Image 1 (tube, rainbow over the protein chains, first blue to last red):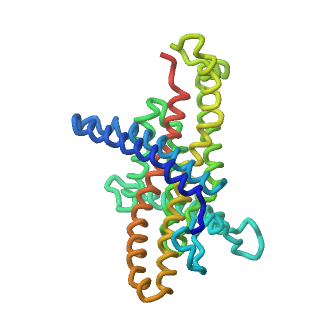
Image 2 (image 1 turned 30 degrees about the horizontal axis):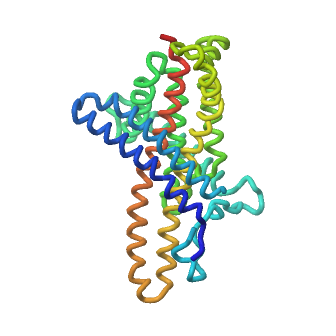
Image 3 (image 1 turned 120 degrees about the vertical axis):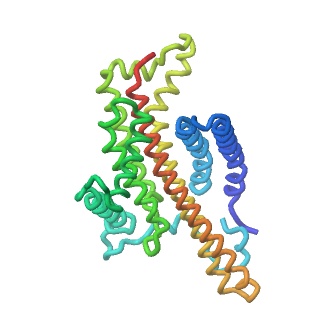
Length: 67
Length: 259
């Protein structure tokens, strides 16, 4: 077997952001379920949080290729 | 990369080399595919919105409706809701940004083009530098240079000793982290998405050339590739939205008054 350990490392590094993204949308969904009219207020916040958490996973991906 | 197929020689897993495309016309380095796609996107966006707004009527045609709903989305959801009462000045920039990025991203799944321009990192860099200039300029014009810098470096409502840690963090956030994350997020999403599609389609193609058992599993690779193409469509729209959303949020932050 050949391959790069970077990719294994990236797989491990992606766990954190994956949990974070899941928690952000879980909070968003339960928020909207409790108060459906808050959807338009919560949506940009949820996507902002999603983008910030996802950025970490993507930096890992870039580093897995660069290093 | 390529752990699973490395034993059989012949299959080259997609890598960063797949993104370095040769020039289309001769060896002029300014005619590579991404550059031509950028020009194409500018033409497409301009033609679409000029045509959709030329014969504007009270009862809109289908084309006018399509153009206006995109404009209305950016103006209301990204401009008005986020920036607040001064939003109209920034709507042209946000709208251009959104349509430009969206078109360039969608090139990634349009047949025959199939290359997301933003998977070359220099394009997102330029867009992030533009956003950087726009939101700092808006903030400086709104508050004056000294007050703006002071508010960045010393956010109010914090105990004095904390500034030792907070000020360097705030400075690096505004000068480095914001533009860098903004561009890398777009780049990495497009890069990863294109790579994902390459893995499934090139891998499926390679399976087709193998033994009969491998030929039988090739359709699964292609099916998943098609499913992921739809997934990519979602990601591409989302990333155009997020880039514009973050730009609007940065502008709103620069304009926000101290409480």
